[in-house]
Amino acid sequence: KGVWDSVTVIETSDFARTLAPNTGRGSDHAWGGNYMMFGGGVKGGQIVGTYPDNLTDDGPRSLGRGRMIPTTSWDAVFLPLAEWAGATPDDLPNVCPNKDNFPASHFIDATALFEI
Image 1 (spheres, one colour):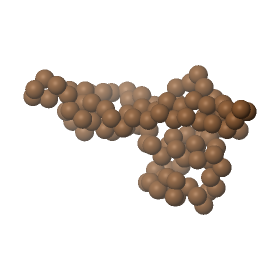
Image 2: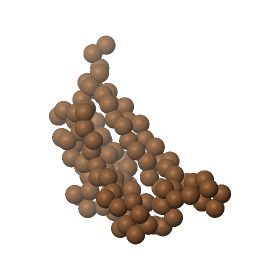
Image 3: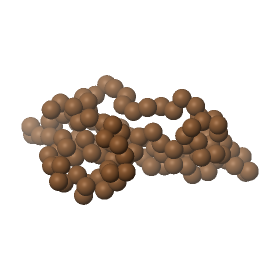
Image 4: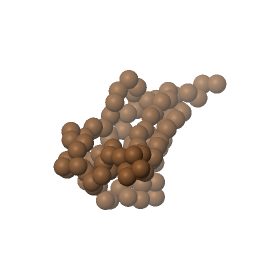
């Protein structure tokens, strides 16, 4: 009892399908997914991130055949979660080892996701 404000549940999926059919009229595995987060300290009722403007093969995030590069990395979501949970700046390279592959502007600010 009394721990809800200290709990965050995050659902992730790294599974996606191509937007274009394969030769068998099905779809192939793709790159991307979604996240859903809830908990006592989560600022709910919002969609965070960027939906691609162009989902065609000519779009800037396209790898061809309906495969898109995601707009939001796992690290962009897990870094603010780690900060909310009390990780220090020295901890973050261990929690999000790919964080240095992205500019600081890529990450979602913890105050946008959590009641801090």
